[in-house]
Image 1 (spheres, rainbow, N blue to C red):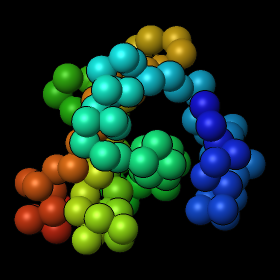
Image 2 (cartoon, rainbow, N blue to C red):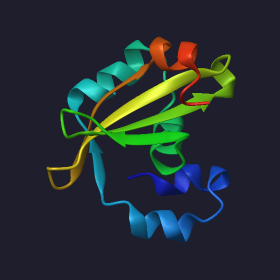
Image 3 (spheres, rainbow, N blue to C red):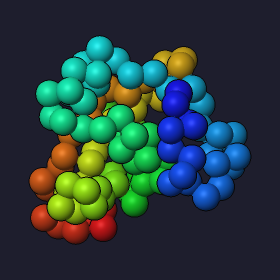
Length: 104
């Protein structure tokens, strides 16, 4: 996990480091970062300081974070917590969350 890359964004980084288990990116998640021009820093920011966090019907943990640098679009990160280390399954800008304002 690249916690050092997001420290400027997270005030209580020691708290987050203790709260979050190790997380890896799947090959698909890495591909999505490149394909969708998503900065990896935004992924870690969404996980460590989401505007919204929930457990879906798929039992994965979903994180939503508004990204100002992308005109306020909502970044949606899906993490499988059942694997050790936890794995980022996918990441995308979610138009549904942005339109409804649920993550803002």
